[in-house]
Image (cartoon, rainbow, N blue to C red; front, side, top):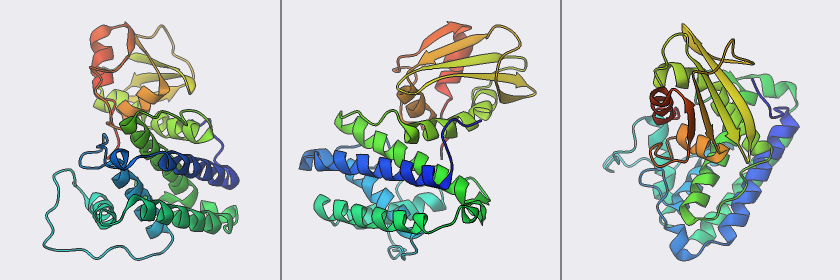
Length: 272
């Protein structure tokens, strides 16, 4: 179930929109703000941008930094993707923010040019993605999500909220919505027969229903009253789903089964 347009032209525009928003934010950052810790363990605001530069560099076909076998692996690195990400982050810690931002502008311009050169059918060709084999279109939907989430990480860290709505935000909420059945049924442990509703009050507005019938699944409508309704802002919803926030400290209105609501809210995180 998706709300955002995922045509090639729309996905390109969503990436361009997000990268431009990050650029605008970066221009306002002080030297101290660049070094502000974010919700990603071990990463500063500058590290977040380094990660985006690294990922898009790899997708553009550029070689990654050399791996140092003797380098200590931080505790927050738990898989091969994490190790690759960390190599780029470490590399850019030797650069100042001016160079980092210049490289971000250069690589995102290159990537947009590459994406615009692909025909619509090429977007449906088989492709590796972080969630398994799929299509290039699916991969770029994930790139919108990843870019937007890391932008929000940066903004939250320095207290400069923005870009919480629009098509990139809608696409990112789509990504979470696609996993919501698994999140509620498996991670949240909602019992069989449960009916759960999420009401997102903005900047992205949605009403999402999950029915647990053997396994969790998104449905257009519930076959009865919800056992629990969780009412919260879409930015808080995204932060919880991406493991960036503590449910105990988040502003969430729970209506109905309070225990089940708190259990689900505490286990919303699904990203690696």
